[in-house]
Length: 406
Image 1: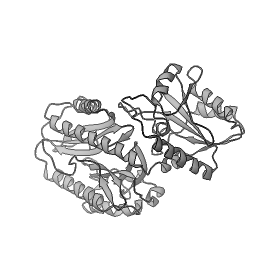
Image 2 (image 1 turned 90 degrees about the horizontal axis):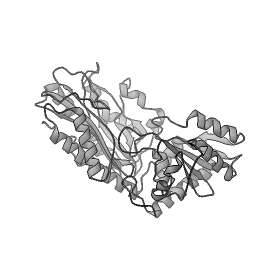
Image 3 (image 1 turned 90 degrees about the vertical axis):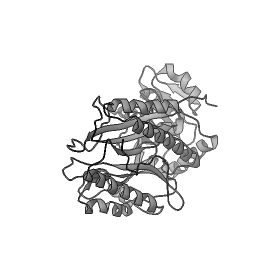
Image 4 (image 1 turned 45 degrees about the horizontal axis):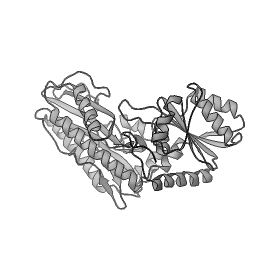
């Protein structure tokens, strides 16, 4: 039994059995003998990331790692730092934990593939994070695998793998609920701490503190402000600076806290002083678009059905900076749907997103993000929700759709 820790609370044995069974059934159908799942990358906070490997391992290796998941044998977790193996054996749900000589993790992976007799196998490559980012393997690793297994067939299957795990189990949704509750606390504390003179970076530190205090992690945030009278930006900073909040500012936040790798997220807007008429109108428009979608979306609808909800933004003379719907649970996932044609957000929307069918257990962000055509002024209202059997359920208590003034 894994040892308790602050990074990866363990799911039940039944949950891991479900995941293994689901993957192996799908592997048989796809003709795959093994999955090679790469773990790497974080997003600048205290959440280790590496979501596709962590889904099976409940452990993220420092720098990078691999999960070798064969069709007919037990999985193996391979790290690049041998000194970390005892710690991984304490935390991971995978019993077979190994390292490579030196720091060349691909050598250990290749040896394991040969042990499994996969010299002529069909091996599926899964990148470290959702297909939204389009990452796979380092070129050096891929070249090594092709060199030592020249007769094996390698195929990138990250979208296939991601789609298999989009529908969340009851246990996963409980983790989402807990993450959303922590995100609520973080955003409320950020709002209450906001005052003229406080730095954007100070507000980010509040988020980190809430995550640590509540037993969660802090994946990332965007925090920024600009003058309503003379706006200089419509999108907040990923790395908050020492720029200060001032009277007459509009504050934009994108705050996410996580639990066990599952993330809540609030796209918040509030005002330091009475909003100008246009900013008040922008906020009311965003809130109404968000709320209508949150009330009416239901399973069986497609990404194409989402398009109608952003029409009020177009009618009011604005454009959209991101699609109204983004898949969300362990960072960005499919789909990205609900952008106005020709808008900045349209580049995120693919044909597959329009054809995507929502199912119970899908977790998404709804983000209404109207922006002036000159891209000088805009704001957002967004929250995290989960599709149910007959509708969609809000995971947050924080009133992102209510106009709030500091």
